[in-house]
Image 1 (cartoon, rainbow, N blue to C red):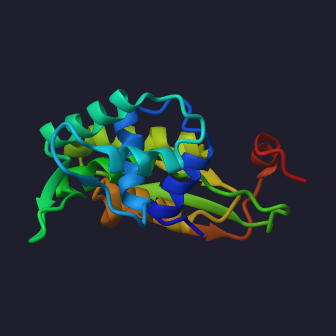
Image 2 (image 1 turned 30 degrees about the horizontal axis):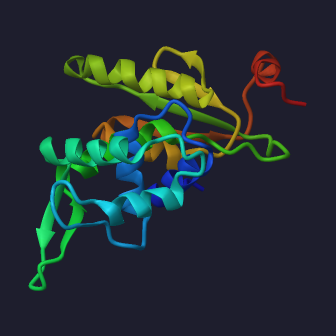
Image 3 (image 1 turned 60 degrees about the vertical axis):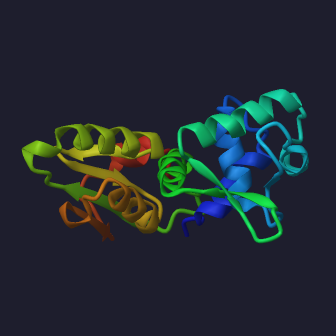
Length: 200
């Protein structure tokens, strides 16, 4: 079963966030934190930095870097500051920030391999109109990244359950109506695919 975005982001942060952009880390933390990011002014983000530190296990970022990342997200309207009646200003993710996170989540998706293969094949088929050429290439890249192998033109094969992951990807690219996922119990001459996936 596919992890929801919060689980994906939490797993990402727990992994040590190697090679991650600091602004993505900040967005993830704002999303999964049960504590509010509070700012009193543009130059006073002590609470926000403290919340960040709760998830920054490697402590590789300086306070100034964290503050700059938060300010940068605000300048590009990925987050917004909203003050309540008591004058406390909190940080919230905007629709733009949510789109950035969704784009990031698509890169975090991976299929969990069961200990034992269930002897079934998963086929992903798609027939995209010409105007979707860039998305077609992106979809192929993502299928390869997950571990799929090309079966035929626009048909890809994989041995493990992946329906929810593929539907998530198709929904992200807004091509759900052009993508079919099938579970096949038997394929004649599948020995080459068994070898490719190292299946017994």
